[in-house]
Amino acid sequence: MRVDALGRMHRPYDGVPRIVSLVPSLTELICDLGLADCLVGRTGFCVHPREALRHVPKVGGTKDVKLDAVRTLAPTHLIADIDENRRDAVEAMAEFVPQVVVVHPQTVDDNLALYALLGGIFRRDAEAARLTAEFAAARQELVALAATLPREAVLYPIWREPWMTVRRDTYIAAMLSAAGWDTLPAEATTRFPEFTWDAPWLAGISRVLLPSEPYAFTDRHLAEVGALAQRPVTRIDGEMVSWYGSRAIAGLRYLAELRRQLS
Image (cartoon, rainbow, N blue to C red):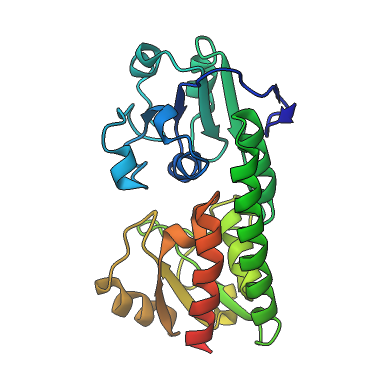
């Protein structure tokens, strides 16, 4: 039996599952567990691995799922995330999807439970064990490297107009912390707080890490953010920091290389 983020028990599934995934990183993980042929639905943001998903029907976005489209696909399993998907929509789909699996990774090591959860439900224990071993090696490499470098306070904007960042109890902040980057503000009342560039705590940052998602910051934003922050600004691949699951393995390696470059 496996337990998801809502405390629901899930037995290993017998037969061929029909899976609808509402989270891009989970869709990628499902494929890496060898279940690409079992995916019958995905969101428009589920784009990796591109070739494997080319013929998988889209059911809307992460926040605006088309319930009728999901119903038509007759899935045996729906995979969702507390932060990514709307609760009311997931509860509505639970009325006609036999198994709804909800996750909520908040720390780097939560990936281990995620591999075990989905690997156990879909009888892909060997594949989950392989991912676990790769994750452990990448995690150890990053932690060892970070221990040799001074920790830095950073700003990680996730949106513009209004400007928004991440609180320290988010998965993004946890990934950055593993690399020796501590996000500011140290405390906030919301998980993704808005901020203004005259906030007193901004004086404590050493650099700005400007991600490629969820807001599509590009090179043209470097000068703008640099002028506002009066600190070095580094472009960063947002998928490598915010996507959990199998992408976390590549993300840990990516952060190790980025820290080497910036040190």
